[in-house]
Structure formats: C-alpha cells, structure tokens
Amino acid sequence: MAYTKKNNKKRINKTLKRKNKININLLKQITSLHTPTGEEERGVKFLLSYINKHKDTWKHKPTIIHNQDTKNNIILVFGKPKTAIMSHIDNVGFMHTGTKGLMLDLGGVEYVDNAKIRGFTNDNKKIETQLQIRNGRPFSKNRKIPIGTNFTYSPLWKETKNLIKSTNLDDKAGVYICLELAKTLKNGILIFTCGEEEPMSGDIPYLTGIIYEKYNIKNVLILDTTSDSNNIDLGKGTVVSFRDYYIYKRAFINKIIDILKNNKIQKEVINTGSSDGEYVLSSPYPMNVAFIGIPIQKIHSNEEIIHKNDIIYTLKNMKKLMTSLK
Image 1 (cartoon, rainbow, N blue to C red):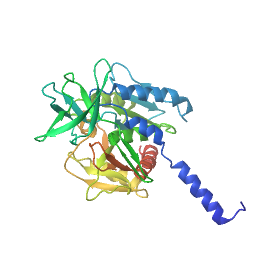
Image 2 (image 1 turned 180 degrees about the horizontal axis):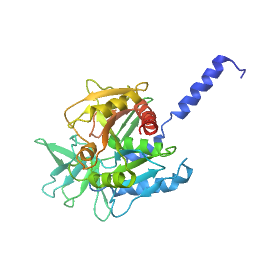
Image 3 (image 1 turned 45 degrees about the horizontal axis):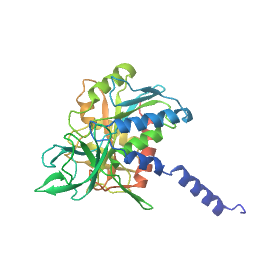
Image 4 (image 1 turned 90 degrees about the vertical axis):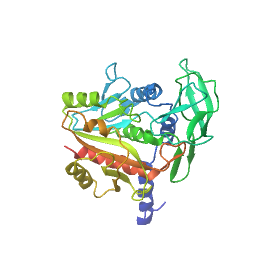
C-alpha cells in the first residue's frame, strides 16, 4: 500500500484499537468464578495462579503478600508505592437456610425469579438449581441442599460490539483492570479484597494497617462498580463520587478530578451504597480515600451490563492517577 496521510491515519487508528483491546477471555474467566462473600477461595486460587504465571512478563515484578494473616486478601507491592488501589473479589449471592428451600441474602442481591443459581458443597460438589421468589422472599427450587450452602447466579455471558452482559461484573471488572495495571505499574499497591458485599465481613481495617505502617500509604483508591443513574450513563466514562452513603474529603476528590480533567469521567452524588472505602474511612490511619467507579446497569442481578469503553477509560484513568498522585 502506497504511503499517504489517509493510509497513515488508518494505521494509527488500528494501533489505537489494538492498544485499547479488552482481554475478553480473561474478563470472562474472572466473572465465571464462584466467589460469594466469605467463600472467595476459588477466586483467590485463580488470581494467585494468574499472578505467579504472568509476573515475570510484567514490566516491574511485585512483592506478593498472601499468608495466614492476610486471609483471602492478596496484596501486590510495586516499587516505592504512594497510592493503593482496592478491588473486591467477592460478589453477592444467597445462603441456603435448610428450611424449605429458604435463602438469605449475601449482600444487596437483586432477586430474579427463575434465574439459574449454582453453589458448591463442602466436599466441592456442584449444585445447580433455580431461584424462586415467593411473597418477596428467595427460595431454591431444589429443597435437598445442605444447610449453609452459598449460591451465586450461574455464569452468563452475552457480548455485542459495545456491551457486555454477564453475572458478577461487580467487581470482577475492577479486578480485571488491576490485573491489566499490573503489567506496567512501576510504583503502587494493588489489593484484591474480600468480604466487601456484607457489612463487617472483610479485613480492610487490618489491611490499612499493613499498607500504612509498612509502606506509609496515604492515598487509597477504591476501584469498584456503581449503578447507572440519572446523572451516570454507560459509555461516558469513569465515575468519581463526591459521596455515597459516606462523604469523601472534598480536597482529595477535587484533586482526582483535576488530574483527570482531560479524560473521560462522570461525577456522582448519591446517598446510598458503600464500598471498601467505608472501612478505610473508619480506620485509625490518616488516609485520603476516593471511590472510582465503572458504571453498570442492573447491578447485583444475573444480567449486569457494562460498556466496553468504560473499562478502557477506567484503565487509562487509573494509570494516570497512579503516576500523578503523591
């Protein structure tokens, strides 16, 4: 092909598309993991395997902290960190009570009548059944299920040119972005947390102690998902929250917005919902906290919907913040 400005522009556009391409196979694998709050081991096992397999190909090799003290949480420390990102592994679901198929919520799960759900017994036997909603309460169609069995919505994946419809995009999309960040991150901490969906079931206060006392981290970014609303649209960019149930320090949020002012961002003000940020805010350590969200439709249902561009925008924004925050 002869060189022309037009042909050169086409080559540039193709290069940009390749650079911004989402690793769909990886994201699909992560969303299919069964990781209800309190039973995140399958996700932890997958992540540790992935990290150990790929860490030598990353631009900078991290220190991996995962032991009895950190429980199911995984901490990756790169270089001389100033900022930490937290993304949670666990997702919403149901716990079987053993009483006539009655289920109790794990997190703020949305009830979807006749939706397929799956769980695992203590001896790792998979159970698949259907959710039934009666008088506003969730039941399993199969009554012969061991008491205490946790269920999540069965994996579902539908994809168009721009959209992904799947189970467990909250917060597997954030986990995916962290794994992509790990490829090039020079200085920073990535934390894959557990127990976010249920109040007081996580270990954030302990984790904040590790990153503050050992690494003097004073900036924490909560990379999670948030519901689309009147002010938030799919495909329009990353969400920065002024507040959810909790109010974040305005000076730090303004700093985040200023750093990202030329990037694709949306601003959110709501008075419901919380995240790992709740426990960082309540810790005894003087940390700046910001919630960075990826917008989702039908959050906590079996058909969460996300725009591919929002994943790309958020990855770009997180890279910018990790190099700009001091």
